[in-house]
Image 1 (cartoon, chains in turn brown, blue):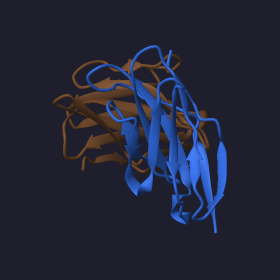
Image 2 (spheres, helix red, strand yellow):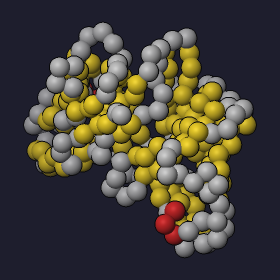
Image 3 (spheres, chains in turn orange, green):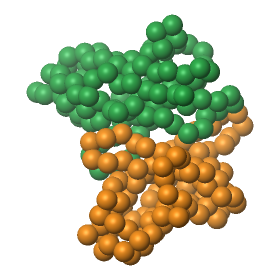
Length: 117
Length: 115
């Protein structure tokens, strides 16, 4: 089956620094990837839709200058949290959509736990 | 706008008992419906999905769900649960023809299976 990886799985950073999270589709090409954020004991909230070779589409209320998304290839999207604050601490999950004929499958990565101290 | 309501935040159940996790959605167009399971500190795993066709959908781990258009529901069921089914379950909806786009998730239901 299709596999999506995320790196790192856990990261701790200091306030004011930036951290990059990678999302890779390992055995398929993903024109579209999605970035979600999940607070403890809450649901997933879509942050942005990442399209290969074009600018990401951000959901309302998500600061595009703070959460930089780059989708430079069909197998890699990155989320950079800039000038991190403790309130950015969260579980970040990506998913990658496989476009195959008329059937679209979306596969989720294992998530990245970000802690900002 | 789309929305998903999971009516129960927590469902405690004894092992080998049946369980139903409820999900209602609102949408003005055709929808695609999904159930995902999340174990602690992990990503989401697809249990099952409804895209079209038969309204009774069978998924992995013995789960099934029934799409009811008139009641706008997509409840998840399992006839006999195991301890290992303890996890968070999310219902999700997506709109669009020819596939699906972004997913809108419900708040989740915590299934706790007790011995």
